[in-house]
Length: 335
Ligand code: 5GP
Ligand code: MN
Image (spheres, rainbow, N blue to C red):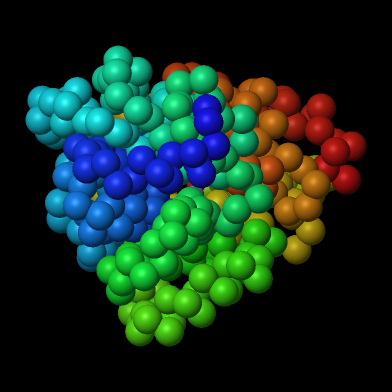
């Protein structure tokens, strides 16, 4: 993978471009891909954004979101776009299998592939150009750097600012995680000078609960948490029956894991969700406990030091029993 700055001179060659992101995109994945989309369109490129799967309703207001293709729904036209593309940008993921069923088409595509990402241990051999920096708060911050470093600061308009602010906000937990650097605040100040309305974005993302989601949250907090004080750990296990009963949709389990990290003394929080196709794990930690390593080692996953995820085909009961058994080996690390 060659450094991204070697790609900048190519930006003036008009291309067919595909931009993609990880499956079940979050605010940073959708914000960074749409931010780059609005930027590359201004340079005259023919740009399409493809999501590997569907996405949460609370992302649908974003400028350009109505033009995003869902690979699972539109596989034939999406594969044609991938095949014909001159460039494919991969944003906010480190390994191609994070795009699920899109992985094969991405691997087979013969075009120039560019990575912009902030996760640990990227699959650098599949990309021609790229930037991977785990110190960055978000991929949105990296797209902001990409636009500025390529000498295009003047192209940043309100649509781009709105998309990029969204991922900066969601990936920093509304500017509270340690990744919130002075550069993050400088980017936000730049967006504010352009006229960004940050409070509307916060409302669009966070104040759009249905009654059933709030009741699902209440039930999860009351009935689904187990706390292991001797390990400073909290575990939430969400059975399929809850997802059905509360009509839980894509993205509506996001943020649940963080509630457990707010319990005094808790350093490690884990949630297992019984999805149709797999059991999905999310891990969060405070301080030195590295959940990226934990997720990689035991649950086929990865991510960042303090926020990672994983998945398994084991049953919910099997995987939670495995988690509890493994926890015994981490008593020292968690104290
Ligand atoms: P979340 O728990 O919110 O799904 O994800 C937390 C972080 O870990 C995100 O940066 C996400 O991209 C990453 N992540 C989540 N699940 C997986 C996984 O199964 N594999 C890998 N490599 N990363 C994951
Ligand atoms: Mn991200």
